[in-house]
Length: 398
Image 1 (tube, rainbow, N blue to C red):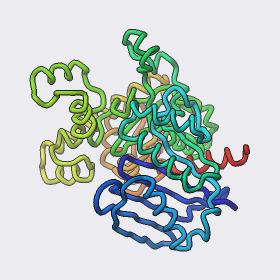
Image 2: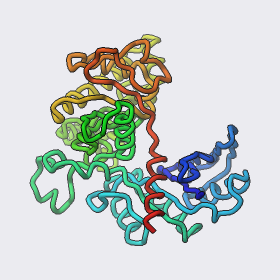
Image 3: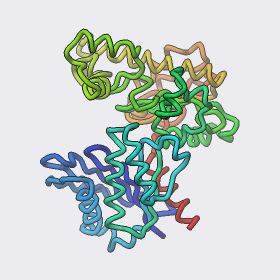
Image 4: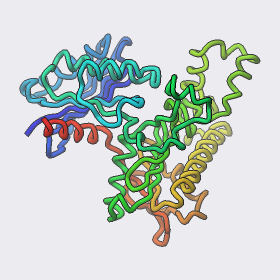
C-alpha cells in the first residue's frame, strides 16, 4: 500500500489529490488559490469534511510546504515517507515528450524551455515540480503532459500551411491540450459501449473554461481543436478560439489596444470568448442566468459558443468518416444540459439525438434516444487519476 499525490499547478493555484495505490482510493484532495497574492486560500477535503485557511502564500514552494504540513496536521498521513510518488500535470510537452517522463534536471529544464508554448501554465508547473523535488527528493517523480496524447496526429493535421522554415526552425505546429482528459474519457466510453477501443471512432468534447474537441480513432488522437497554444479551436470562457489572423494587424493599425505582443495575447486569451461577447462573465452559469432574464449579449455569446462546437464536431465526422459516439466532459460538458442539448439537437442529421428525460443536470452515461445511431455520452473526467496511474507505472518499472 503506497500513497501517490497528483499535482495540477496553475499560474496562481495548485490543485492536488492524494491516492492510496494501487487501489485508486482518494484519501484527500485540495486546492490552494491566490498563490503570490494577499489572502491565499488553502482548502483540504477528507473524510467528508472540508478545512479552509486563509494566509499569505508567496510562491509554489511555500504552497507545497503548506500542503504537506496539512496532510500531517489532519492525520491524513503520519509522516512524509508514506508518500512514495508524485505526478505533475504539465501543459506543454512540445515535440520532446511523446509520453510521461521521470523528472530529472534535464526534463525540468525542457519544461521551463517550453514555457513559450504555454506561458500561463508551464512556469507554474515547473515551480511545483521544483518545490516537491526540494522537500521529497527521493520519491518517484513523474511529469504527465497535456500534449502527449496528441503526438499521434498525422503531419497533415498538425502542420500549418506556413513556410516550412517556421516549423523546422521555430517548431510552429499544432500541439493540442487536455490530452489526459481526452484519453481518459475515450477509454471510459469504450467500457460504457462494451466494445474494444480499437474498434471505435469517438469525438471527445472537453468543455470547461478552456475547451477542446478531439477526433479519436481506435484509441489514438488523429486531430484536435486547440493549436500551437491553448488559444486555438472553439470559443472559450475568455479565449477567442479560431479567428482570421488578419484581424490582428488590422486592429494594430486602427485601435490603441493592440500595441505589442503582450496586449494581443492578453486580449485574445483573457478578455475575449464568453466574457468579451457578453460583456458580463466568462462563466456559463452566469451567461445562462442572464439569458433567462432576456440579456441579448448573453444569448449571442451562448449561440456563438454552441455554433463553434457544432462546427468542430462536424469537421471530425468528416476526419473520422463517421463516429460511434460523441462524449461530453469537463465543467460545462458534464453539467450543462442546455449546451449539450443545443449542440446535439442542431446536428441530428448525423444520427445523434438526446433524450430530454436523460439529458438532465447530474446526468452520467448514455443520454441518447433509444434509436440513435451515434451515441451521446456524458463522462466525468478524472485527469488526476490518469496522473496517479502513470506514477504507478513508473514505480513498477523501477
